[in-house]
Image (tube, rainbow, N blue to C red; front, side, top):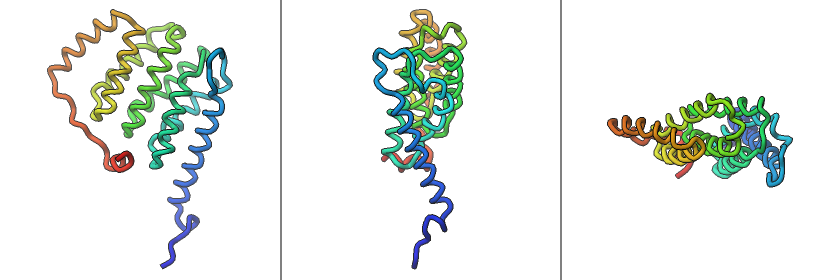
Amino acid sequence: ERKPDDKENPLKAEEDELKHLRHSLIQLVSGMCPNFDGMYTCPLSPHLPALLLPLLQALEDRDQDLSRLAKRVAELSANTPMLPGNVLPQVLGSVYLLGESKSWHVRSAVLLFLQIIAFRHQFLMSNDQDLARIRELMLSLLQDSQVEVRETASAAVAVLVRICGEALALQLGADFKTWALHPIPATQASAHEAPQFV
């Protein structure tokens, strides 16, 4: 029996087009994110808020090679130097939107992105609101149902403590004592994610 081609299978054609677009996005971002040593500006900066959402969402792709590429490029883009003051809040806003993604791979990538960009731009975060929102997201993911996300969140919080100093460490101590009174959530993975990373 003859199998339908892509034109007769709209869903397959749509998946192929999405994969092609994600490949193109990864190539674009990686091409505009060279070695940043000695650089003070990057042509990618104004466009990073718009590019970040689809870039991190590419981690959900069934193609494991594409997902890994997206993760590496997202970390590379987090090293974009000296984001303008009007761009950094937009970038952080995009990251916060993905903090509640159904994909634990995306949630984990969000944490890696945050710890890099927070460390690199700590002196540009002149208001406490940015650091407070980053802290809130990191702490919420410390209680994630997926163990890999909790482990990544632990490393991310350690970076944040180095940035903020002893005051945050003491404040977190009280939070951790409260959490210790409750059971850790059981590890969960959605049915459509499990076979992708066996």
